Image 1: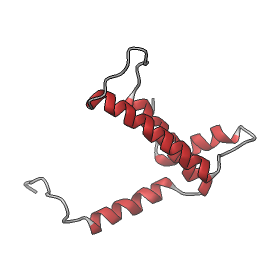
Image 2: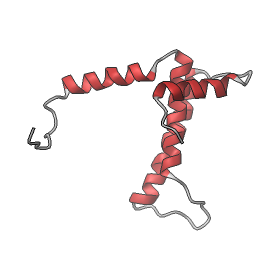
Image 3: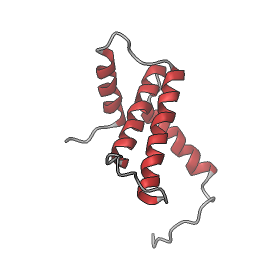
Length: 111
C-alpha cells in the first residue's frame, strides 16, 4: 500500500464520511467516541503488557487496530472542525522543540 500524508488521510476519510447523509458526528459525540477507543486501546495494552490476562471467552484484539481507530476518530474530529492535521502537527512540534528543548536528556551524538 502506498504511503499517505496526513492530508491524503484527511481527504480519504472526508470522501468516506461524505457519502452518508448523517455526515460527521457532533464534536461532543466525537470526543465520546475517542474516549471509547482510547479505553479499548488501554484494555489491549493491559492484556499485552499488564497484569490483566484476557478471559478465555474474549477474542484476540489488536493494538494496531485500536491505534487505527483512534487515528480515524482524530481525523474525523479534525475534518468536522476544519482543522488541518499537518498544520496542527507542525505547531505541536514547534511547541515541543522550544518549550521542552532542555527538558529531557538527549542521546549523545557525534555530530
